[in-house]
Length: 142
Image: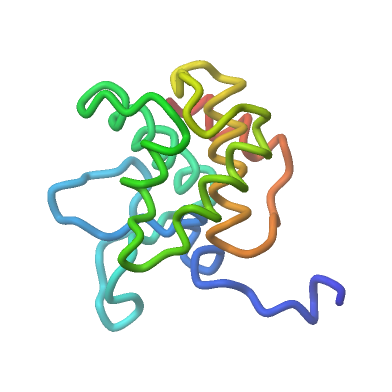
């Protein structure tokens, strides 16, 4: 299937490839005003880079505020089992960044942060539409 035939996931349409829930308390850079007539649940961003930047910021907050320092701990909070196949998500994300599910990681480290965000996008969308350059540009917005 080529790109023109592929169904575009909601996260890609919203420039929110991490499917971050809208919360009025979060004032993300690059976030579009919440409009329930367009999207009830999730944030929308002006560009994918701002949506990816929000993933980076969220992962860093999980470490700083909650002490979540492994793929298992982070993904359990990011994608709770109540609505996700969290164990599959954890295994896929850990394998794609080359660590064990309980290995200590640092999401403020550029290589780790980009690798984990790339894995999250792949799981959330079910495909990976963004180049490495897009993830790099998003990191530069931190």
